[in-house]
Image (cartoon, rainbow, N blue to C red; front, side):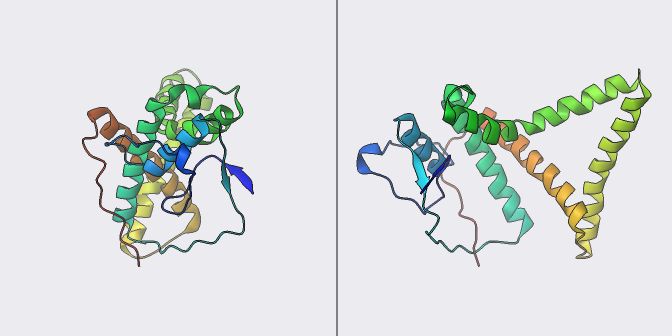
Length: 192
């Protein structure tokens, strides 16, 4: 058995005494349940011998909607338990901050870095080069969109595109969190 920081969708078991009611508007209830177990001083563990099978959907639009929903739910969980995620001096806080929080706030960091690079480019040629690399990486995403129309997949380009797309989904999810989530009802991802 190994400690883990989150539980996986519909494939988990929990002791009855540890059950905590999930707020009615939370979108990522499995993550909330795992966090509530850890807040009570218990561990979430995984069994390396356990096997689960789940089909995936390769429709990119469906995957983007799923990432936006999960991003919205992640921000719900973060702002519901900020001290748990930001207490880097506790073992769970350090793991949550380094593995989750930094990733969730990466879109804001990327925007800040782009703005800072534009600003510094006026003063130093190194930042002009850095800005060129940043703009080129964004243009790679546009190239990937064009190549997809012809069913052409280049792994390195797809990797860069996936990175930016995931961050855009998080940014949209943050916007939805800020506007407020009225219901936890969502359409399950179609599986094959």
